[in-house]
Length: 342
Image 1 (tube, rainbow, N blue to C red):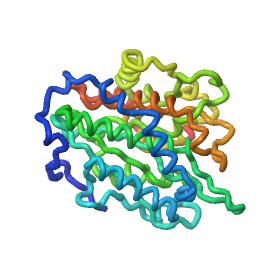
Image 2 (cartoon, helix red, strand yellow):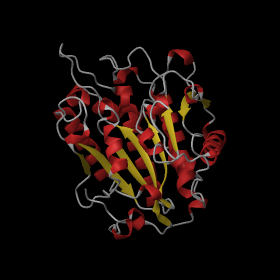
Image 3 (tube, rainbow, N blue to C red):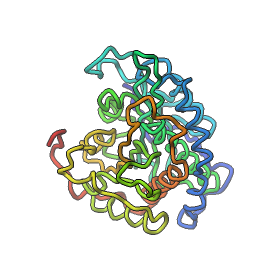
Image 4 (spheres, rainbow, N blue to C red):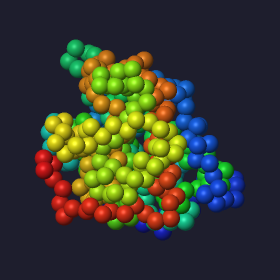
């Protein structure tokens, strides 16, 4: 597997049109506000359309989705950390322990930091879903996880706009859209087994998996999001997250599923977990399940786009703080081993 040393990365500067200013002088809300319901809706009505055939891992629809993501990153002039026109981290079929899965790939794009480029923040989502059933029904996966994936695209665009204005983040950011989540967190496992950048240099992972809907427990509340894992490895990250929300967004942060005794065990069920296993602090952003979860009725017309925008802004603002603070996130609860089912 090809690994790219950060110091050897080509010097592609997104901020060439403006002199780098002091990022402390920037107003992050100016860039958060470029993340809009309209833009998210435009992306999602394409990404979760029948054209993408339910984005089954390794199948033609997933390949179309990968090309869509690649083309969006290229349109932002965001380079690949793999070099050239190669935005795909190939995941070998040997990683899949069940089913007859065809070759597939993670999609990656990279924004090089201005002061601490060797330190990496990973912002992730999974872009695969479950395809077409034996009755010919397409499972579009608008919420799962089209919502998180288009959120990552909008976060990338907001950081690019800041960089063009001279406010390149101090730390580097890897935008990671993983495949094979529905097959057992396979794409993220491959990334953490064969990282493009050393895991020791990865300061945190912000993972977005389903942020476009309202679950039954919050019916009538369009101002909440579940946070999972923010305090598992780092008190520092948890306090940062709370502070960003209180300063900028003021959402209801629901920690119900963060409970160690939660029978759903969502902490172990999305791609952040492969980072957490390696003692990398994580936050998992989640709206909870709903009647359309893993059904062909999870369609883009049911997404709450204003809420999707607000949640995506929260992730962006948290990422901004992590990427630009003086010290990297402190891991004060590192574990010798973390195992599913513990």
